[in-house]
Length: 426
Image: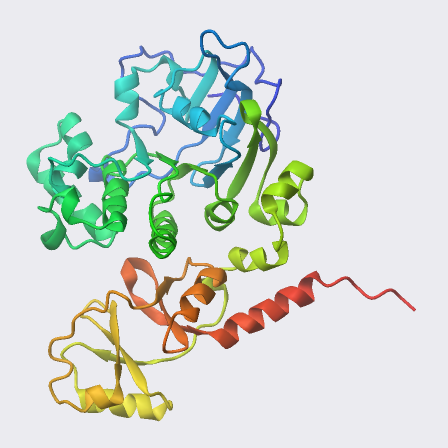
């Protein structure tokens, strides 16, 4: 077994006791053990705990280490955000986990295995890696991009093909529509989804994400963040995510590590604790102004009651849809497909056409948030909505209800009440 810390995380000059060593004695070329190998044929693999034990990286000719004696535990199945200024070593720290950068000293455990003893190429085939801009091979189709690692692992064609379709469905890209396209035929957000699918192809327990959403527009970025949270609810991978954006860290992270030069961790805790009790002035600078408003980023859509809307199905009866809307005093209905995925809003006037529900094209600008979205995301989407509400979806984009501005205002009122100082006793 790998050494176990006595607390959630330690860093700086401390390290695991030198007498504690992992039980693995396999050769560097042998396949990983202890839950590190994933096999989609037997069901999806969850996450694996990561332990960094006194990890240091020094480059030749430099007297100061880029990463200086970092010791840190990343719990299995959680998203840990590495945040800090440029040059602090957060990306270097992350890349040492899959040995894209070799550590100068220290040990790195994934599950029970000290991966510094593994064959580096073999190791990387069992760790997902997502970069900014997706990094897709332009000469390969979407399907072939996703299939790269399964083919390196010598999966048969049937299993590989099934996995491609499964992953495209998982990231909400229709296999029949996108499998044979080339990256140049996709939007930036679609390319990033394919990048995530490729990283998940061999069902790795660990996913490394290096500012993956930094190159897309704010609306697409929000949707990709929501998509990641939705995927994490299903897959429970261990995700190490590098970002400059503290708001993104608050939204996505189960825990946040705030780093200074040399990857010195000045605070490592939950977003709630960092917002409420920043460790020092450096952390307070990262939190910035408006910490109270950031509380909206800590509350998920699933934590508040959803509202009712009139719903119609493609191919359904427009007259019945009109009656359903009138029964709850609504002027619009939300149209869903045969898998209950929202497609667009339709007014009662539009539904007066008896063929209005026969062929309904999806509105690409439909304002949608997921149950994992934050109230801050819902409020942003609501400000651009012409309906005063935002559609909410759950797993596989299934319609769940709508959220109204009144719901968000009530939640903000509750937050203010919870954080208001108690009146002194008379």
